[in-house]
Amino acid sequence: MNHPIFQPVHASWLPVLEPLQDSLISTFEAVSKGEFIPAIDRILAPLSTAIDDVSVVIVGQDPYPNPEYADGFAFSVKTEITPFPASLINIFKEIESDLGTAMPENGNLERWSRQGVLLINRTLTTVPGESHAHQRSGWMAISEVIIREVASRGAVGILWGGNAQQMSDYFDSSRVIKSAHPSPLSAYRGFFGSKPFSRTNAILNEIGKPQITW
Image (cartoon, rainbow, N blue to C red; front, top):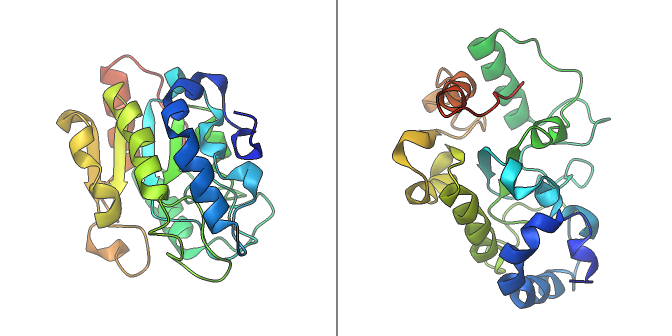
């Protein structure tokens, strides 16, 4: 797996990705005929955490269309980005309401990834300035295999919105948290007040896994 797309991937993921190698490379080659985001070495950044360390999965849709934002992790933005995108602001508002934690200084969620949260989009790339541009490119089949693998290992699934909730059957019913998407279009229809962060930590505590510092 010498293709540069695999550069950020932890070695523990390679057995999972081996059967996907051809489709992953062909999908990348198709989308890279035009402009794409995030950068090639960030597309698989969520897999930089060892697979055995993944205890939580947050499933997103596709990268932010603003090329300054997209960093490879679902919902995350680069450290220097302010103001935060609206969905991320709503996520932080819910954390504040749920846990009493103040709004963080930056929106880089790699700090969650390092604690074992897989932040993966169903579609791994898009065209700058355009949402859902690569939705039918082949990424969804690839991300589904990745999500199914960590779900089979007992991860807690946080699934916001209908796109993410298509993955719900892969998770143990006692380890899946579903609500509306944090987008401003839907946050008031069930995302706010859903307490996904405290609920996730309660599940992790029950199964003897370290809680996440959100």
